[in-house]
Image (cartoon, rainbow, N blue to C red; front, side, top):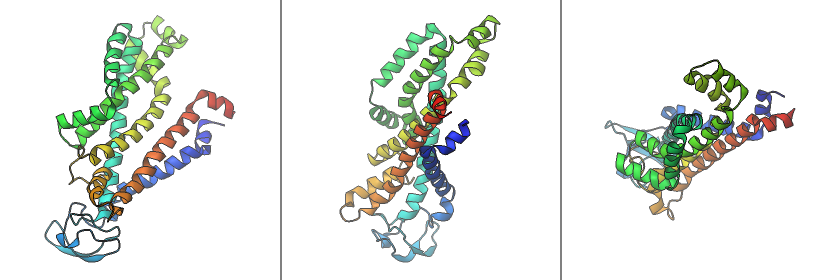
Length: 291
């Protein structure tokens, strides 16, 4: 059984890809599914229940007959549109954080693993970063840099870099002693060629798996930051700040918190299950068991 067949046969991979595919479809179709601008608010429609309808004022000064499928929040904004558009932000933050942490951590890990002189210095810096709780470091970075999508991505990615660095360093320490790397060094192959043509391709499978776990953690961390009021501003709808705004009236209007949570939970679960499935498929020991 080849890797593609094992991938399709793995239930975790199928579930993860299915849910993520649905979330990506929702994000891509947000302008069509989100029936009004998520930032538009009308004081005549504060805390409406699901299914209420009326003439809703838009940001451009016009009005439209509108049905509030999930009701409205305490500012008179359509919850359905905000939850749909929040999918875009969460997936964007998760994917960008994973890419940034893999690029930075992968580069530092290769340097630390291949060059002994840099190993001690880089790893002590990584140990220092790992000594700080990830959420506290993210809060400090957002407070210092300001709350934008870019700064939130950086703030969430920085605490993940040491974990990726340690993973890649361990892989490089093992790979640099392999015969094909020693042969390349004996032929005076440039170091950059050895790193990117011989070592990096052999480290990609664990990196991809680690990237899925980083993405899941980033989606959850962004929701936590927004829930605490330290993430993106309220005019940018995210699942975290939608829940933060709804928690004050949770006993009267629980849907304001539960609706975004109903998308957040399966998204994080799907990404984690996808990572578990990819680890099983890409693990050489698993491949031997499957043959």
